[in-house]
Amino acid sequence: MKFLEILKTAKKVASDGRQGLWRKDYLCWVKDNWLARGKPLDFDKYKYLVDIYKDQHKEIVFQKPAQTGITERMITEAMWIADQKPVNALYFFPTTASIGDMVQERVDQPLNSSDYLRSVNRMSKDSLGKRVDKVGLKKMTLGFVYFRGSNSYAQITSVPGDVIFVDELDRMTQENVPYFDKRLGNSKLKWKRWCSTPTYPDFGINKKYKESDQREYFVKCNHCGEEQTLTFWDNVNKENGDVICSSCGKKIIPWELEGEWKPTKPENSEIHGYYISPLLSPMVNVKDLIKQAAASSDSDLQQFYNQNLGLPYEPKGDKLNDSLIMNCVGEHRMPAYDDYAFMGVDVGKVLHYVVRTSNKVLEVGRVKDFLGEEGSLESLIKKHKIKSLVIDALPETRKVQELINKYKGIVKMCYYSGGVPKDSTKYWKLDKDTVTTDRTVALDSMVAEYRDKKIQVPVNIRDDKEFLSHMTSSIRIIKEKENGDKRAEWIETSADHLFHASQYAKLAKEIGTNLEPEIFWI
Image (spheres, rainbow, N blue to C red):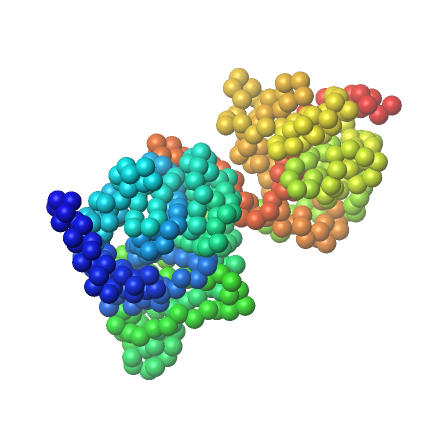
């Protein structure tokens, strides 16, 4: 299409009265302009999507199984808002490598299939008059859409935004996720959209969904009139693969029924959250679900829960729990004291610490300061006659170094490395005041102490809710890299500072065991 024909098409569309409606009605814009794989979106069979498209709350969370139409919802809103408002929409994928194919199939194809969108795309120019049409950047009528990978800190922080779209949150580079929100700092709009298939309880999208008003889709049985949400366990006949009413047991066809989204936690109304059941989709293969539900391995069950049901799954035996910790209760109370002790410190907004002997936890807690006579690490060093202390080197490296300088030979700063040190029987390596260790192996070793009951905890540890929460918040997963290699990794589902402080304390014990007690305490 020549330029004059493109311009003529754009003017015709803008003058037919629909443009004003599009600014107010995102769903109308989608129905008028968006073709997915050459076809309009089907809102007759996907009734549950209608209200999802109508919802433009400030922050929305989607916990979903695969193939339920939510990615299309995310992409279309990103393109709509940049078409109708002078804003920057930032769309985040798990990696930069995943951007190319996704944009070409899910963005470029619809842009080239609609007369209006094609005309907008071909006339899009930046402030210098240059045509804008890149894989990672699209210019619409009034605004821009940036596509970025979460694994690139530089790409995340290179541009300010007005609305963020986070696609597959659980597969993002987690240490970079906090920077997404920061891109909205100068915007009045500050919209946020989060979607993902979940992985583990209280992690990623499941954690955000629990912070929302937790909407579920209720359908009414056309036989008995019972209103219900649809679950694999209650609404699937395992004998013949039919979707059935949980009340009367008769076969129902979910996408033919009228339904309604209802918040189950209305008190959390600041964030709208949607859980999409796979049984709502006309594309679901229920017989396949039944086969996959019979999986025996943890990895297969993980895929079934996450990808097929859109639910989090906790692998068995891959985390500490309250029972394992309570099995280690001794007869002493904290704070307790010994001739000398070892200490581990995790650095954050406050300093979480664990003090122990070779086989007994003496005290856990938090202080604010590194140095000082009271309420500091220094005061704990003196009180417990600390023989060896291992502390997180980051992010307060300068203050850690000051502590090292004052207590030379006792304090070591720790860095988590990428692997077990070579040519060593240990899982750690000491070089002067610095110790490096493999993160996963180090945490495995600490957790094994509790599983094997090789350490005692105080009787009153049961009263320390923070300790129990931190120690049970991390999960050990098997993570597959892009090259197919698999590696075990501990991930946090909530605050876990004392979990790491316990590891540092164990490391301090191993480093300090061969030191003479008189090295400091004479």
